[in-house]
Length: 184
Image (spheres, helix red, strand yellow):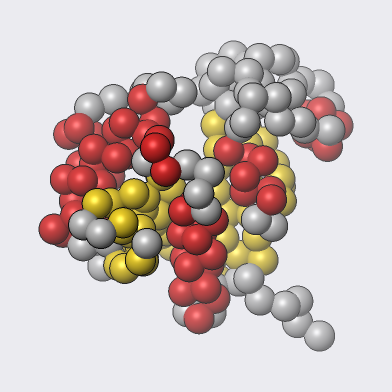
């Protein structure tokens, strides 16, 4: 497997991978190949960073990040997808580590992401998080292989939640990682 920048010639493969990769658990994320292709074209814009994982000529995963409204020191990881047949082989970890290394070299301090729980895969999905949202969030648990556990394993921390972001009991879990040491 090799990593390379995501390019226009991989756009159709990347869109198919994104659409198929999210269809089972998050069908509304990129419900059509057209919406997925739109996301890929956004990932290829000049202000973003995107990497592809290739097995020969076959795209097995890709990742992108974009600057946020917080300025150059904070970027958002969005999206990450790995082919269903290639999950569990370290592709996602390699993509995340490569992206974080690139952003670190650019002087980015924090990378954030949101990971929705739309189908009760965590202890904060399917429940009313009010009142005392932060107490519930402090004891968050993975129940069914939610992506937040993958990101937490890579060093991201849960830094917040948007209750009901996707409807009642369907929160967006906010995570972040610091890339550079705290200033002395």
